[in-house]
Structures are given as structure tokens and as C-alpha cells.
Length: 176
Length: 256
Image 1 (cartoon, helix red, strand yellow):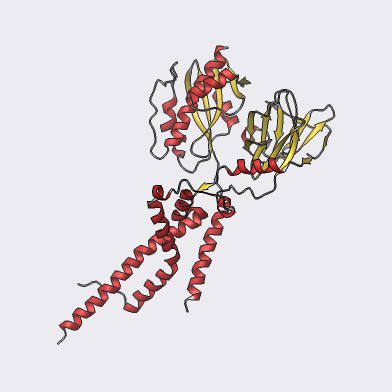
Image 2: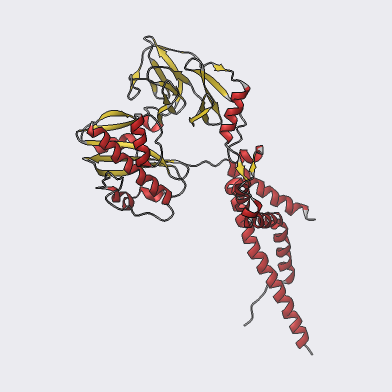
């Protein structure tokens, strides 16, 4: 007498579980990196690479808080302005972010690709506008406090650390 | 005005079927909840699980075959379930290599949607993904007549500059040779599998995900949500049944 409803409930459970196996995290592309570079300069900039020496990697570890993967970082330069596309993991997935810097001062920070399920609010101007005019001093402190977003703490931290790194890298390539 | 309660038989039927349907999930909720409440005492964080099914649920089973390819004369690039390894060391997440192009100072591993640049020591120099490449999917890697690498893609053929920074369209002749697989010894295979699985999953994590239903994705979580709703409905229908009974008893007492 009870077998039919129980079987139905179990079948429903199996369908739910089976359907959930095929789900994948999505990737939101807000702005293609190529478009970001085009929009950041008046003319076509030169693409360059910064090779990371052992000393540079050690400095980056201090600035960024951990090692940045790879032995070279590409950037775009026109005059005193540089643009960087850097990645850092928010919680589990990397956030691709673009930075434009001139004379050690940040002109723009923009989230280009966001892959996490939470914290996507960091893409909006109410947050990214805080990075305009940002500078980093010798003791690795920023000249402005970046206000967080509740529920997006890890993404906010990741972007704050990335902006320190971008300012450091800009200084490295413009000092050469 | 008194509250009009459903008929006793209806309430009982709902109560019974809801109880039967949600019994298993409620038992799981209760047992996992009890265990989680005593995590420290039971040392749940110290117990690791290496069961194939559980590791599979966390994408850590590594059940597929390891494919390996020769690089830098005597070294290997191995691929296991979306992870690439240089010899026994994890290199990066990625698809299986379609081509390995050795050069100085950059050796390139070309996968479907990424290019990985390595140093002669196997250190990762840079990882270029599809958003930085002029194509969306790579099919194969070829060699031009003048020995230059050719990337064969959906959108046509491309050749890189000497630094692998810019890519130009290529329309001349080229040849493609398949990337030969190599055998790796059992010890390397085991080391790769161990790297892939890390230290396993803690019992605490598994119980927590079983409690919330996350162990089975959104379907499991929805079922646990439904079980929680079932508890509310069971309490409500139980109270309604009890109210109805007590009202009837009162009416019977008041009757002459």
C-alpha cells in the first residue's frame, strides 16, 4: 500500500540529484580584455612584458601577500600610462581585473571577468570608483580606505591586493 | 467565530504521507546535526575520507586514465581530470595538451583553450587563456615549411611572434603530426594521483555537506529544504489533528 508513494518520492529525489550533477559554474564576461585595452588609451599602446626576477618575485610576495603565478606579466604602455590585466582568486575562482595607472596613480579599475557565484557587486561603479586616484606608499599602504561590501569580503580583499600589485608593477616598469 | 479545521481524515492522510516521504531525510538531518554538534570531541576534522564515491562528489577522484607526453627530453607533461602536471608536480588546471612546442627561453603547451608558457626547468612563465587569444578553440598544432609553429583553430591558422605575445594570421602550407603519448612508471602515476587528491576530504566537510544536502548539488540542497518545510507542515498538521480531537471531546462533554 505504501510502496507507490515511497517509490515516487525516491524517484523525485533521484531526478533532483541527477539534474544537479550536470550544473557548472558560469563565467560572466563584463568587458573583453582587448576592449578594455582599446578603451584605456587614445592610440594603440605597445604590448610589453615584465620578466620577474627572483628579487621582483620576493617584492611581489610582500606587496601582494602571496606569490603571483608565472615568471612574466604582460602590460600595455603608451607614454607614462600603463594598463594591466591581472587575476586573483576571490573565494575559489579567479577574478580578471583591468587597471590603468599613470604617474603612480590609478586612473581606473574594472572587473572584466567574474567567475564566483557570490560577490559580483564588486563590478559596479559604486565600488570600483573608490579605486580612482589610489596611490601606494613605500610601506605598502594605500592612500584611501576601500569600503567593503557585505557578502563580498573575499572579492573586495582580492581586488584591493591586486590594485596594490598593479601600482607596484607600474612603478617597476616606469622606473626602468 | 471559530477556526474551520479540515476533516480529521484529511489531516491524518497529509500527516502520514508527509511523515513517510520525509522520514529518511529527517533521520539524516538529525544524525548529521548531532555529530556536527560534537565536531571537536569526535575529532571529525582529523578524520579524512578517501572513498571513491565521496572523492568523486568533490571532483577529486581522478578516475580517468593519466595521459602523459614527453617534454624537455626526459621530462613529462601529464594530464588527469582537468589538471596538468610537470613530472610529479601540479602545474595548472587545463585540458589535455594538443601540442608541445619547445623553444628557448619559452616552451609552449597548447591546449584547446589555453597556452601555457614554461621555462626550461618546467616553471610556469605565463598562462594565456581564450580571452587573450585571437581564437576560441584550438584544433591542432602544426609546423610551417620554415619550421614555425602554426595554431590551427576554428577561426583559421595563426603563427606567434618569437615572444609568443602577438599572433598573426597564417595562410601558407603546414604539416600536423599527432602528439605521441608516453608511458609513465607506476610510482609517478601514484604520485600524480596523490597530488591530485590532496589529503582527501575531512569527515567534518562530508557531514556538513550531507546535512545541508550540498553533497548532491542543488538537488540535494532542495531536498533538504523540502525536508525542513516538511517538519513545519508535520508540526502544523499534528497540532491541527490534536485541536480537532480536543474540540470534539469538549463538545461531547457539553452535550446533555
